[in-house]
Image 1 (tube, rainbow, N blue to C red):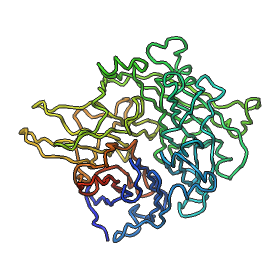
Image 2 (image 1 turned 180 degrees about the horizontal axis):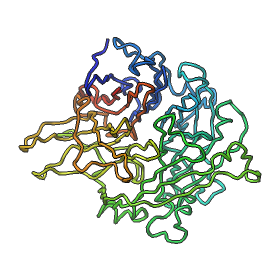
Image 3 (image 1 turned 45 degrees about the horizontal axis):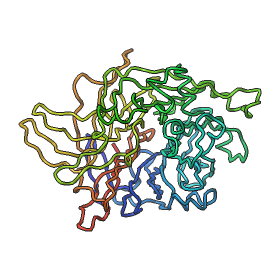
Image 4 (image 1 turned 30 degrees about the horizontal axis):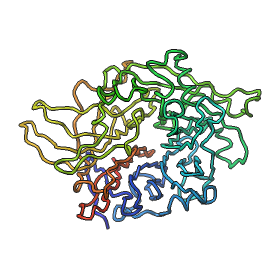
Amino acid sequence: MLDLTFWFGAGGIGFPGLSTADTYVLPPDPTIAVGPDTALHVVNSLVAIYKVNPGTGNPASLNSTKPALLVSLPSFFTLVAPQCSGGYFSPSATYDKLVGRFLLTAVCGGDANQILLAVSSTSSALGGWLLYSFAAEATQSTPMVCDGYPAALHTQVSYNTDGVFISYVQNCPDDPFSATGAVLYALPKWAAYRGATYFWVPVWTAYDVQKAAGYHGNLQDYPPMAFVQMQPVHPQREADVAAEVAYFVTDLIAYWTDYARYEEQGAERTELALSALINTGSLWLYEGPHSQSPSPLLVTRIIPRGTSCLIKPQETQLQQPGQCGTLHAGAARPPGFWDGGAVLYADRIYLADRGPDMLNAYQQLQPTIWWGMVAVRGNNMLITYSYAGIRYLPDGSGTPAYPGVAYSTIPISSGSSSSAAAAAAPAFNLIKPGASCVTQGGSQLWGAYAGIDTHYPSYRIWSAVEMAVTKGNSSGEPNSGVWISVL
């Protein structure tokens, strides 16, 4: 039996997810998706499936949260990717609430450099799966071709009524300024869900996103490589699964090509990019470049954030208290990744991402937070996140806050206002405090993202967020893990 923690009104439930003690892989990069009677929890190198009570949306047994199935990510994808010299990593999972299918993507690293996709054959994650492997070098015939050894990173998966959409980052170490950026695949849903062995997949790159935004010649503000990663906007409910359109958001950082200026001044973020694939119904008949049915059309608009957000280099780290040292968020990944969640609910898009570090009235640094994952329930937007630092009280006194998990709720307006933010800062609500400083044997790396999904019809929100799960030790044995919350 595990010690379950209850909070959040009528009784939220929390229990440990997979940790580095299970995988020995850093960082964990947790993701989670929940269907009617099962939940899929994946970290780098390991897959866990939990049984869910269909009526309550809680774990099927509150006396034990042992996974119903535990399998390594290499074993899960062995039929389509038996050898990945660079490992199996960057998992992303979601649940198609319209059709009732789990979707899971990952990267097969090293010389193989493949994008992996798994589609459940039923609404249960414990049933059969359809497996796919796609070459992650689809940019060879595009302006973003990498002449060296490109590596795929940070897969994300989403869907609408017509297609399955996989975004990832092509990292080209030999040419970071013109061959590193976002890549987007649009898979016809009819093919992916029935196990078709041959079908066409339209592909877009950062160059296409920049052109769609209207930046054909003005490269000073946003060159193609400013569009480094496209974060899918996930449908919250079955009613939110759109036809003919799928949305993506991209963080934008000026000075992308001027690292010296970035190191000195930080990256001013005043805008974001909202992209839409429209006419996705064409995927049902698309048969390649010479098809009578066109591919979907990519449209992008640059949108003001409303508030300028300055991110300095030192603020890309999770500050631990005392002598614990800092954790490099996202494995010290480059700026331009969406550091949070995006959800479509009742024809509105709700976003959460990383903001600048904040000071209190005493000019003391508030706890730093990362990976704000967002869900909407009723008239509230709920955000779960990692936090660490010093928690200061109104009188200026403070206590150490080791890497743990918290949430905030923000009332949302049902009117026409485009802003969901409340006038006052949302309250910090503790879910699970960190056990100690995170020790990782010399590799001070925090995860690249977290996960969140909503169970229906119970409206219970499941999230998977990285934290320090046990006490550290003198040998530096890794003690980072994941806390699964059911709110």
